[in-house]
Image (cartoon, rainbow, N blue to C red; front, side, top):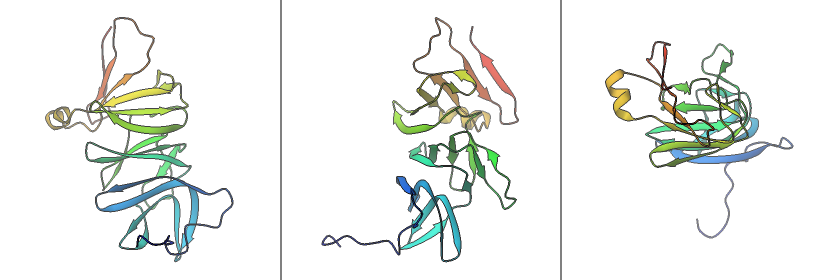
Length: 193
């Protein structure tokens, strides 16, 4: 109200060492991520929750470890952190999502094989998604601490692809550049020297 702090219900959790790390507004809903797992009104929330119309709501997935960063990039919500698996259905099976995932409001998608260690930062720059953290491999290729992901919309539309291109910064390659894309049916194509 501009005069005093207001609590959101009773807060998130009384767990020691629990924390909120990141927050973002996406599609008229406020998403909250971090290192917490709590029960509010008999609903379990694990690492990601949403706040809408003055109430907490679960998301359609459960993340197995901490979420450090959110970013909206090309109309999708990206989440990154320490997680290695996300339960995307009611089976209680955790599917491999290695530290980064894309949410389009309906379903989650991994970005190839992800990265080998934690992602702490996401930022859009020059129409690319930049990822920073404590990692040495991105998509199975050597890359230390910083990488960018480029997914041109025309490639998605023309080829019905659900993946993008990846470039590495810094990268110790010489004059050849690797380019890789997925045809949407599990086939990965490589180009370059």
